[in-house]
Image (cartoon, rainbow, N blue to C red; front, side, top):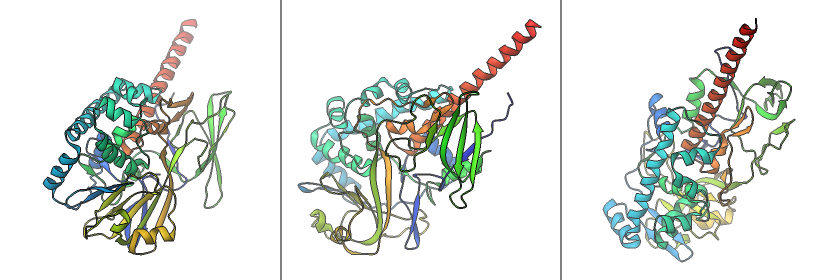
Length: 435
């Protein structure tokens, strides 16, 4: 075998996938993955490697929590006042929740150690279980029971904070498994940051600064060649219609392969179907400029919160929050809002939500898995030589999780290449001995 590995990267649209931005009224705004946790070591490494700046944040940011009984909690722009109000409402559970998340993050750090040692895993369960046996339990209990029975969190804290984080981050509620619930809560706490100019800069720079051949084509089918155990990837350029066919020893998928996939890939000549049980959750992201109508949520204060989380699951809106453009060199008070909803909002619904508004920009996502199925096995290896990075997002969908999944697949391929090299050496040695 040669020492050089050739890597082709196929992308039908823009680099970054769900790290996407949308131009609106002279600014550019995140419509996909928005924030990164300070404990995310790989994303932090990429930020430092490429000398990227973090976006500036306003020091004052108020949050309101709404449910079927009306507005339940509004934070203050003063941190000490907010802490006092939270302590009064949630009591000691506030500290229990923080302790549980910190312990989870400490256990999660073990994954970085294992990958540094070159350890690879064929399933998501094996990867998480090697970091902590607790994570296997978290995959098999829903968040409501898990935070109550395992973490000892009281009901009002679960209803407000855990459910609230899940509504914002995943458009779902506490019937999802505890692992993703923990990741969701972690994503609302600690130091959170994003990349000046957009988070998609990281995958763009990773492509630009590494020895890969970028192919701006849509993959339409993958054919398994049984006679030599290779894969033929057939793709098409959507601008000019040119088709391309290349053959590879290894193929890595970072694309949904569920039955509800909008752009399915055809898999030919495989002994078993190549697909994943489960479905993706629909989340619609709407960006508009306007004045939020506080009375819609029963808010009597003159100044509405910067983020309102809707915990009333019967309503179409999950959350509505004030957002800044991805370039924040001139940070100022923004009247641009992002609404997460279960479906596109009607003009009447938008008029009810805003007293004044501009026309909106809408992105309709199948954004992340539906996490209500507990104990679903997720395999990184779909077929010998065919790998699936997206397997990891069935534990939790996040930028860092995707990088961890990609690193694990790279380690699996490296291990397979080492085995093949060793087999070739042994074959040549036996040939010489026979001569």
